Image 1 (cartoon, rainbow, N blue to C red):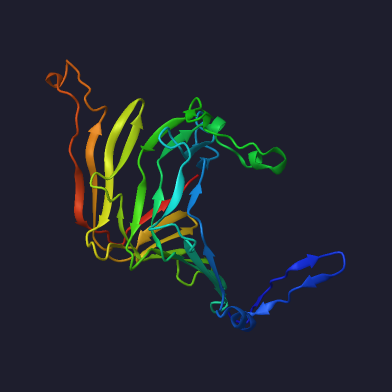
Image 2: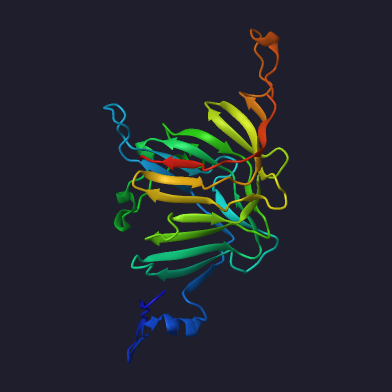
Length: 317
């Protein structure tokens, strides 16, 4: 921070007196905190949620399909209330993650920098079982539903995990999805808002060891009516010592949408879909394939793969 004031006013009123703290400039703040900027250490073992929705408010350009609808992440019969958990070796009161915050004029172009790092005893992040649903306008909220005077957000469930009419389950996860870190090079984010001197909003760093490290992977179902496609998903860095390195990957927002990609050649990775079954295992039909029972198609994957100058853009909604 250069030549700026950090206005930090605390006003305390009592029956006899009023107190106020004076603003601190960079020099005074550094003398007080021992650093230039602010650091937040946040301790949270898990974050639970009922529903997270991405809502399209106007449908598509058609007279028949112009109502709002949403993609919703929520619980299922395996786990009614999903959560995001920080994986630790033992119960700890240490911060789960830290955020170092600073600002700069950047040659007359101000920005705020947030450096996010994992806690010293955090070994990974876990997403407990969940499902992805497609919900019609009658089951997704609008801003007015969250008004203080009439707080009534909508739910995709009529009771428990029974979905409303018109809600369709698309993807189902019935096991924990663990993202395991390389302990000597944990993932980190550098976020810049404003005139981003790093040219993108978010730059990634560090490395992940694996996603779903079990031999069979994490159980996933692509739901179709009362059946679907079942498989176990697994991802890992080819080099078990360095993992899959995140340096070079970035994310940001430009006038046309959300972008995600990498610069140059990524480190190598292994990915697989294990024990793929289309339909229900064991089901037989006397009129097809000589009444053979349905079974696994086997496993498919890649070994030692990498991406070069990858870029993905999400726009719309």
